[in-house]
Amino acid sequence: MAPLSRWLAAVVLLIGFAAAHEIKGGRKHFHCTKEGRFGDPEDCGSFIDCIPDKKGGLLGRYGSCRGRAFDAEAKRCVDLRKANGCKPRTARSLNSDLSLSHVCEGTEAGFICADCKTLVNCVNGIAYPEPCGQGDFCATNLVDFGGDVCYPDKPEECMCEKPHSFKRDPYETGRFLFCEKEASDPVIYQCPDDHYFNSTISQCVNTMGLPDCEKIGVFAVPADCSVYYTCIFTTTGWVQKPFSCNEGLMYNENNGHCENPCNWDDGKFACSKEGRFADPLNCNRYYDCVADESDDGFRQTLHECPEEYVWDSSANYGYGHCVLEGSSQTPCLPHMPEKCRIPNGYCASEVDGTNVDETGDDVTKSPSIQGLVTEEGEGLIPGFSTDVSV
Image (tube, rainbow, N blue to C red; front, side, top):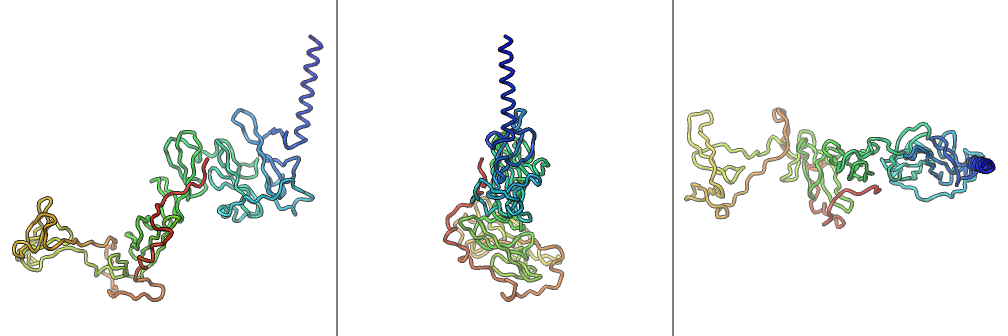
């Protein structure tokens, strides 16, 4: 047994020597001994990320500087001119992504999270995306890595805690996560342009404060009708453009002009003589006007026709009566009051009541509805675009 034991001991020593040799030697046999980002011993233009493997050990993941050099001290890719004598083995890659250029703004080199599942390697200000694998998320500011890195179970904001739920991507306000199952990898979606994801209502909301487009046209902003906007549908979805009226004027959707809102007809009825009269706001109702000694001179009473009946002012020899829907001789077109909210006291101030011509920067007449229909947008259905699939 003794010779066998000595033989086993010798084998163990040989394996240990070989492992130590492999740590120093090659890229294929690099052995992670601690977490962090390290230079590739065989290629000055590559690096290895050593991260936990969820089994109590460490896993090495190789990355390329895309033809540049890896600065082991700064833990980032740099221009070859900053690395004495470095000749990278890996050739210059062409898989940069211009849509992620904004991630690299303000930094020449470094690793930055674009979203929960995408790490961007910024080299000379150019964005090279590196999608995170299954179970990994883009984590920020890990000291041992000199910046951001794809890492297991970090950060919690990117992890799926509940099934069939939505979360805002912590790195990009215009993106959100959909979690199909608990502890699953999320699918990342992109909101339309000029929108951000509101996690409270789980919806994409317009950053300009404009209501979402539902149909092509020109519309006033109800909360502030001095502003109005166009809705145009294209192959990429809805496109909105805001406009402003001159000071003191608001946009009238009915005629497409900026006007003094204090002159708008609100459709409210007031007796001016005795008789029965249609309610301008509701085809099913009518008013009785009886002379009275009150301040207004009339007693005004509102009545309602039976269900499926409408008021016809021409019926009953012109005195008016309730008739079946569809049988009226004078079709009813109820007044549509403006949806604009006019602040209290607004009409007490001095406002010019005339329309303003379309001159200078003021736009008082809406863009042509015909001009809003684009060939590429006609008949298309808007929707979210899947930005990253995992």
